[in-house]
Image (cartoon, rainbow, N blue to C red; front, side):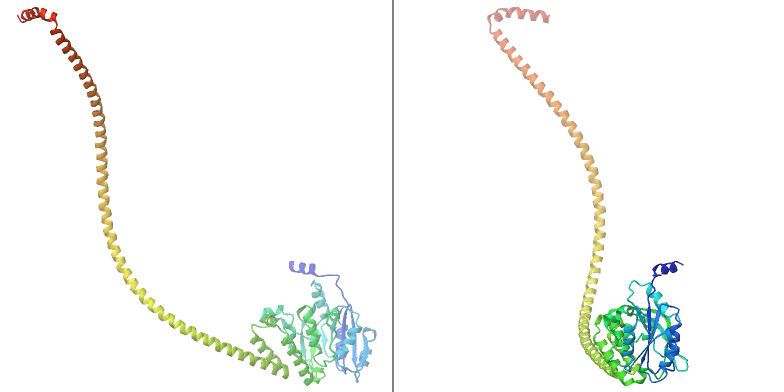
Length: 437
């Protein structure tokens, strides 16, 4: 539902341009009526039908005039399809051109479907395309096109402006072309008697975008009266010349949009030219293939030589690598021995570490004991210092006492030497006697 709403939103409902259906005819009395009837039966009504009689000598004029004002009838001297188409284009009043060969037919919704699709495009100068089916003279279906399948086989083709032309993936009567296209690139080349269609399409598709409506909207009749069938040798020359010109003007980038490789593209063209019996173009493409294959062969030979050199270099490298592997194995063996030796050293180191740990523990105990002794020694030192201080005080006191004693001695000596001492000597003696008794 959302998709339908979006489509309605994108569609320009006021888009109702006039379309000119131009029918070139030469001696087409057998099928002209069916072509005109299919044009008149279009469900899209804003159109005009122009029949251009290219100097017919049968009942073509009589048949055309039976339709009266339903069509516009133009007659001219015989000059080929391109001259008839150009006369119709010069007299058309529509904004879009739709070619209908006198022996082909439109499905009733051909113009309507293309206008519907065109109305959704921002660029209204887009060339519209469609699929078609083919019938023989007995109205038996002999083919149905599926142009989109060719694009799906190699999706970059959708971006190629030239894909429908170079791969013959279009048909003139399926197109709806804006009239401005003729103003920009010119009319059909009247010098081309058979390839006037693709010669013009090539110029048009170079400048204007295109879009495919993947529906069958046209029936093409494979009749012996078709101009291509009547003038095959001329067609071979004209189509070959055209396709050779197109190929020569393709860039590398153009080819990348058409096929995975240049060789693939050339093979596609060879198959196409062979099927279409364009012998001149076939010879041309075969020469390109030979040149391309020769180049590829030379490139392949160069690559093979380079590959041989690489192989030789690779062999040298492999030999060196083997030597390195042997050396590496020797180093690995030595490394293993070193690892074993290292493991032994690690074990011994672990034992030493354990022993060291034991010594450290004992040392810690000794340190603790030493710290205790230091503490005790400090206390003794402090006590000794106290005793020294006290001793110094005692020494000072002793010295003072000695000094006092010396003074006393001196005083006593002085006293004993004095006269008073001598006079009192008998008395002191008597006192001692008394005391002892």
